[in-house]
Length: 267
Image (cartoon, rainbow, N blue to C red):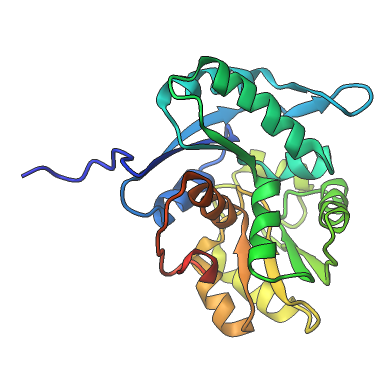
């Protein structure tokens, strides 16, 4: 009797993630439907992972993105996602599309199949918000996002036609509160995240005006509470990794009913 080896008969998805993060793969593995496989390439470049050239028409991809794209090209992937909210936010309107085109050229030029779909976490969350009918999202940002990245995130959704109803910068708790946002990961907060306090903060802070919640940041542990938050708030609750998985399944033509991680993934 053969055992399941999750070979990816339905789809294989490639994901670029922050080199030191454990959350993206863990959350995707929790949500993946049968016979869809995940393959990660780790990036150590600072955000954004592609710098605008003068005139903001073309970008220079980080070396890790180029290298990962070349390696992904031989794997007959169905979809590839740049899984980094900060890059989309800082890159700003238009960045996602130019990066998609640049990566698609690398994947297509050396791919054995040539029809891999490319996306970014920014594009994924935009598509998820629209599909969920959310126009006034309550934006939730991880504690390691500084004021500059938070402002860029709010502006990103405003520039794409949304009207954020407010935002929350997650309070990591007394043991971490005195550390600057940029120091949290270096002291281990990325691994020591707890979802119960995040649930409580979102539940008490979500404004009445909000017609949905978006938890940004692919390294932000949160998919375990999406279903509970939707029940408590009676509104769609989306997250970075949930949105990227959903969008990649859409791009790959995979229809799947994934229970327990929010209405976005349910049929």
